[in-house]
Image (cartoon, rainbow, N blue to C red; front, side, top):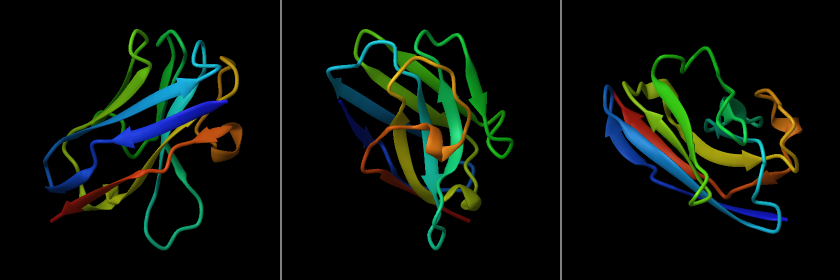
Length: 126
């Protein structure tokens, strides 16, 4: 089992920056593949934003955030981060941290992940 807790959301103006954090704990914290997803208001599905492998060797990003967002991982503290720069109004969403049961690589598909946090809201005004 794995518990995920996101923090760092807030309201910013377009062009601003935020850093989201996801701390995780449980019986399988070592070696899990993790990612960030978001769900905009009125949408049912979560959109994959960024993913990172357990040793940070592999990362992948949605085209909409490439060059603006950076995912990273602190193994010593069981935390992953999402640095978000040059935020746009279309980035407004609830952001979720997710994890797989294993270290096996996965993409940005919501269905590939087993554990989810409660989310943290990001609002970008124009």
